[in-house]
Length: 445
Image (cartoon, rainbow, N blue to C red; front, side, top):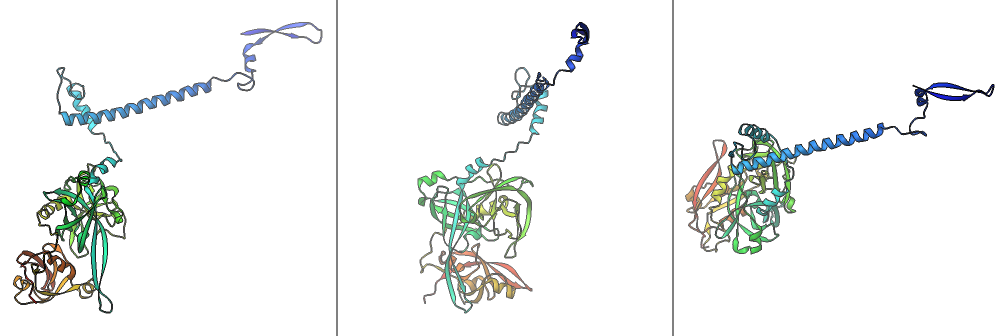
């Protein structure tokens, strides 16, 4: 297309008409933004970006809705059960019967990971307690002088049962071993004295009791009883939670996964135990606390005693399925709340010596209470205890010093029958021998 333009002829003053190309004139227009019109392409790009963002948001929202909808449907199906409507549709999904089965199978394959464990912790924390063991440490100085000093150590416990008169708490044996008194702190901050009901040194388990009459109504309302789980069906990588009185500062929470199952670990006394291994942080004071699954069920009892300071990410717990039968037995023991009167106290009739760490390492003998002499006609002699035996358990409770053994005997009356376990040297090695002892009466002199 051409347009007519008029130009002046300067030579003769006349005017001549020329035809010019309109496209040529358009091409000579200045670029948009430089004294000319703006291009429309930038606006199109903005519209395109907004559209794509909106489309992405719709797809993301739809995906989230499908997952949530599927999870709700699964929950409803498990609670209500399957069924069909009068129209032959699935009662839960609203889809035809054939499609409903396939849809439910696909939705069940969705994995939903929730890293927020605050609700679980809130539910189980009322069943957790802190324990302080007040004890007396005795020993011999370099110059051969006997000494004793007061000390305190911290641990954890789990409320597992209640009877007519007692609140019953599970912990580790080493948490309560050698105690003079035990103090238990509950979730509301109240403190009560506890007493040993029973211990099992081999499994490192203990049950302690708090008289219900010593608890206020507010404390009784604040606490709960823990739910026991099943450790036999655990899998590697399963998320777990540990709660305990770490470092004696009060209850703290750590989380991780199960790193290994049926892990055999050699203890300080040479015995071998089988444990759950986890990368959950288990520090001093965590011993006796709970290892929980994400449902808040106790699947293990943590023990810092077997933790190693040379490595990180390796904590251990006693599997609850192995511990439960022993705990059930300890719950039936008689609680020893106070020592009996001196004239009624039981008597074994032995002279003894501590086997310290140094002596054990030097002579290659087990730790415990070494029997120097057995008095004639006493309960010890009648039970078969011999010179050279090393007493390691008294009524199932681990003993390692003379003071611990004397303290335990003080809770038993003359005439009571119990089991004493000794290490006896035979055929070139020490073997465990279990003896039944009926305590005698204290000598008149």
